[in-house]
Amino acid sequence: QVQLVESGGGSVQAGGSLRLSCTASGYTSSSRYCMGWFRQAPGKEREGVAAIDNNGSTRYTDSVKGRFTISQDNAENTLYLQMTSLKPEDTAIYYCAATARCLYYWLLAPTRYTYWGQGTQVTISS
Image 1 (cartoon, rainbow, N blue to C red):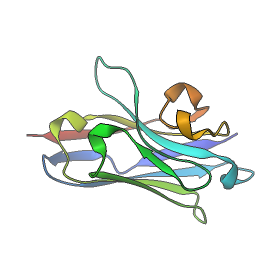
Image 2: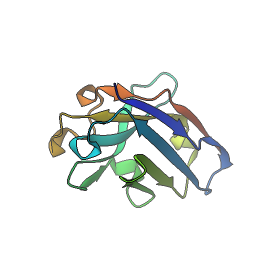
Image 3: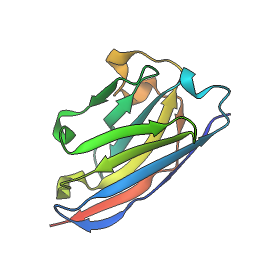
Image 4: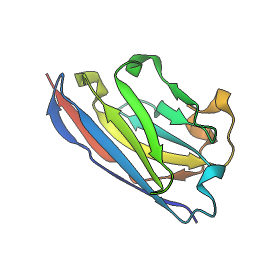
């Protein structure tokens, strides 16, 4: 059973930066999985923010391109999301997720993911 634990959320002012981490355990082989970051703001649907497939290719939702960077350390089974130039509209609970159903086209689709972390709150003040 894959388990995911996020950390690194918090409250910062607009224009600031945060780095989220997601530590995974229970993998038989981390290279089999695609990983992603998703977020959900109050009253809104969960949306894909950034994801990386098992070949290292990445996808970002348009609103974070140029500001967020997803990366992973396979040796440490850790996924990161570096967030810069943060805006109030980035405020949400951020979730880490994993799936063995890797298909680049669907990387940002929450329904494709099987395993989810508990989420970490990110709050950006203006």
